[in-house]
Amino acid sequence: MQTPSKATTGSDTKATGMLVLEEASSVCPGESLKSSFIGFVMDFFVVWPVGTMIRKKVSYAESFGVRDMVALPSAIGLSSWLVAEELQNGDFACMPWTVAVPIATVGGLVLQLINFLVPYKGDAGGN
Image: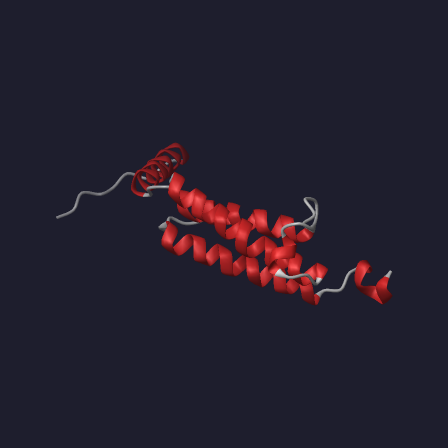
């Protein structure tokens, strides 16, 4: 026979929620220096150059010399790196770097493609 449980109050629920968050953070290993470095490499050498290549119509090697620091391809590249970090540390998910970095890289490349498909003022008539 089970004993009847007490009705939970708001403070009990809040305390239980905190406990669940603490347990999740202890289970999730978070990002490591290795995963941060690999995420940076994928951003700097894959996602960002592809966006620059698409927008400026240059080769991969040329893309490193003509990058704009304040541009949509740069923002997409940086955001893909940040998403890779968040997928590992428990904010978005608790994934190992071998899963999180490829997901963020593919997501960044898809966003670079969408960026290419949406015309902007600089593409119209060579202005």
